[in-house]
Length: 274
Image (cartoon, rainbow, N blue to C red; front, side, top):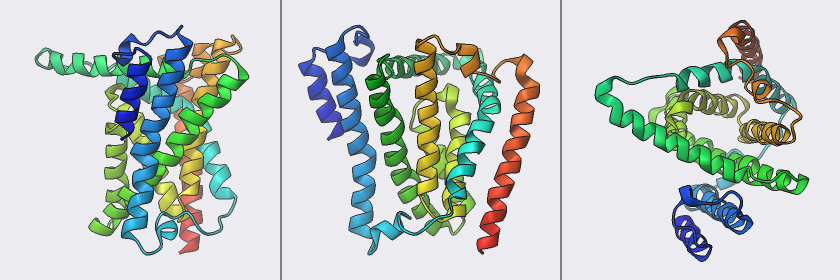
């Protein structure tokens, strides 16, 4: 249904394919963002809520959306994500530098085309240098995916796999694998896999979906705000991608160690609950 609505919006705007969207055409940009909203909402939020409502007796509890939480489960994960930026940027840079054997050149070209299309779509979504544009982008790129993807992946899929395998770690990593793969971006696959696992462990340790939603939102919103400030000339691309260069390796290692310390703190808090 989401794809059908998107197709109708595209056709009414004269868009024949995403790659042909003109970034200087306000109407096409508006239609693309509207299509993104319907596609994301109907692909992630609605299915997760429908499955929970139709299958489970107490859907809100099953989705882990009820219950009180210590504020630590919201503050520490956000600090952890911020601290982890340098080594995650380094991981992304390493992932992008992967080269395939000549026999797999067709697969590499396919991955590269998919990556270029995804970048084009992201650039279109991030269009808008005004405060209103920034607010709208945060809603569409940060809040909607954080809510929808966490409901479906961690709320439904991870929960189902945990019951099926009776192993929380298998459930978390398989869900993270699916979560990363479904974005169809190989050159950011490993960093997204790590993030997916991080969100999964937040759910396991806190017993709630809200910390993962908050962390997912923060991660996406940080990227949106960084792009906005780059467009304003307030920060450079090198600042936003700090840690990605070989010369930043020392900072990336420090970043990794601090991330481990924060994760151990969250794990110990989880163990204290048991």
